[in-house]
Image (cartoon, rainbow, N blue to C red; front, side, top):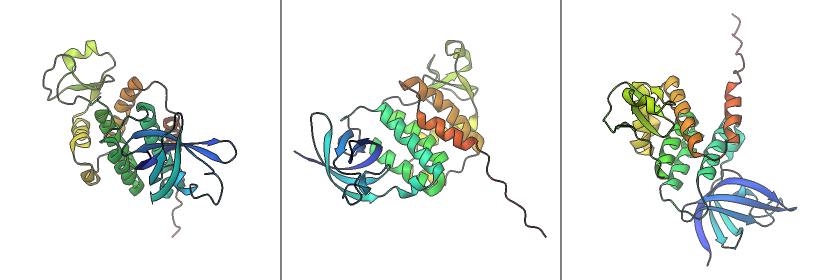
Length: 255
């Protein structure tokens, strides 16, 4: 029996002279590794729908090893993500995190809309915010929801002098000795994390936090993700290298 499902292309590898191995995250089945026969040929109908970050409808025939991707229809080409270097770097990070944290054929109803929402918000130019929301929500969807209200050590409800541990939650000042890696968490960033985790995703575009808050969450969540991932992320190094490049100087108009 064939699977008909929406999916987003997470990863693409060449196979032989003309085929592609396409890793999809699908709405109904979760992550799938498929083979698209002839997809690297210019006139092949699977050429465009198997490009990175493409959101499409796919017809897949199950196999013992790689599944067979037989037909595809594009919903969103993802072209805007591939043609902008910074967007491509962010999207690569988003998809690599998902690939690294999920097993094949393990469906999760919360993840596919989170992935589509994140890439859509990022394509609108809000990737810095979208990526932080994605990290928090993905961990929650996978059963590792960050604890933002009660101390991981003693369980007390927290209101001030908060720290955040790589184990995935807030820690009170009295318990920091048990969590030596815990970093101070500012009040504004703490409140922002709650909103990014709990608000309806469609509302997040009204948030315009300061860069300092975004960077603080980025550092805290990187420690948490490193704690859960089995290997370092190549895309993250590329993204950070890209962001470290200073923007070109804009010449002032002579008067």
